[in-house]
Structure formats: C-alpha cells, structure tokens
Length: 89
Image (cartoon, rainbow, N blue to C red; front, side):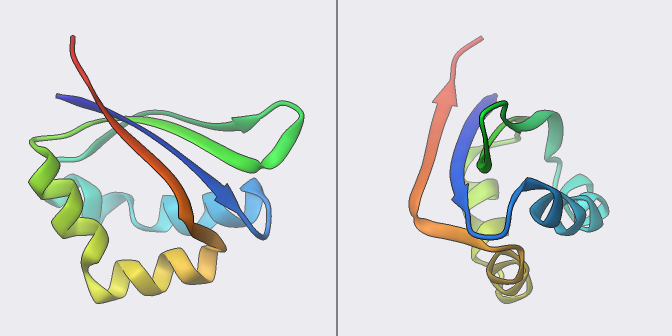
C-alpha cells in the first residue's frame, strides 16, 4: 500500500530533510520505503511525500513513537496541518 503525506514546515525543507534522512534505517526496519519526497517549487515550507507502507497501523505506530515525535518537533513539522491519504494502486 502507498500513502501520500503533506505537511507544513517551520524551518524549511533542507532542515527537515536532514532529520528525515537520519531516520531512514528506522523506517526500513518497520517496512516503510520512501518513494519520493520533495518540497513545493515555490514554497520550501511545504513538504510532500509518497511512501510504500505495510499498513496504516504501522505508520501510525511509527509516528507516535516518542523518539520520532521529538525528531518531528526538532525538524519543525507543524502537526496541525498534516495530511495523510492512503492510495490505491
């Protein structure tokens, strides 16, 4: 299954991406594969991502881990504007 994620960033895409990349091995351990991640051409504070995931439950559990909550906070993710949409192939 795939999922589309969009979220607003407080500190810009480059800052966020460094922290996102540092968590790649943790995502791989739970079966989450990044397909594409980018910011809008005209807005470096708006991130878009498509991932291959085992299930929505895996993603929700992963994102609620305390260490990942802290990483998202440090990356400047604005939690209130997050969009997560499961996609059909």
